[in-house]
Image (cartoon, rainbow, N blue to C red; front, top):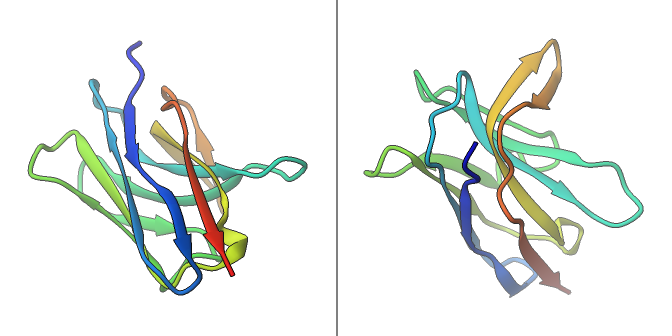
Amino acid sequence: QAHPVESGGGPVQAGGSLSVSCAASERGAYALGWFREVPGKEREFVAALSWSDNDASYGESVKGRFIVSRGIAKNTFYLNMTNLKPEDTAVYYCNTDIWARGATMSPFGSWGQGIQVTVSS
């Protein structure tokens, strides 16, 4: 299974905005989205967008600040991050097939290479 390619991210000051993108070569069954990881912490669900009806889901810590959308190239998704906080600093990984199991979002598809987002105070 081909891995999606991520781009974007980088350093930004607190309160600023940043975007990351994920270009998938294959369509998943449910949703494409992002998780983020910080050393020593559990992986955290960030956001996902349904492949079929563009229904969006967000983690509690990013609601109201992050928006996930789909590009003109339908296999490319974007995570637009605003009002960034130092606690948003992490490596962001996209996954091509995220499923909802009750209140839990679980990844089952291919992972991107990861993009570092660093928010300075």
